[in-house]
Length: 327
Image (cartoon, rainbow, N blue to C red; front, top):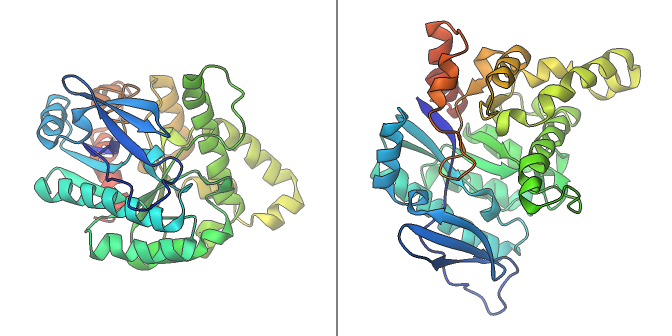
């Protein structure tokens, strides 16, 4: 089994290299035992365990759950689009180097996705090439919005062009909603806001014709595409009855949606069965959100209860992810 949705946090963060510390530069507060606290803006953000960076602990937990390989990507809150460009480059290279080192130690167990400074799409395009040729990573993780701009916007075309040219995959992970928080307690923002961010993000990729301009791109979305599976029938119906929408979006939204990949992280057998109905068996990959508390443990058990054929189950466990990664 390949778990395509896992994250890393380094054991420590680099000292800020400039004079005036950029807003949000993280640091690590070392706690007792295996637990540290990520501090962002001098405030506790998240408690993390050493399985976020300790390779041996990670491999032990993978073996216990039948996971043969993980796709490593940065904790999304480290993507740093809110930094100035120089700081984002320095911090991103540190995180990319951390992931590359983990892959180098256990290449039979890990694939790596890096991060790039999308606040400058041209520079991000150059960093894509570095990720492949300098760090040996297979793709890029990005947020669903870049400082409020939907990831599917045409301003990111230089970045998309570089990904296609280098044959690297793209994993779009939900970030904090772009508007003021309206949901209630902070955790509700992640539980409810993130899936809605994903739904909006996928719609932006379709509406802006990203795959029409870059047909060889391989794009995956976290959390089963969030709210999008429920939105898609409404979007499809609107497209079918609206000539203006068909003019703006030449291809059926349903057809385009089935060209993306999605993880299986929906926490429910009926929800996962619905994903298969909406997206097709060929576009789903196991994802858990390891090593965070929200993660789904023993993901293979949920697939076992869906009555899939052996070939379809193997595709969801391994084959679909290998196609997405370009292996």
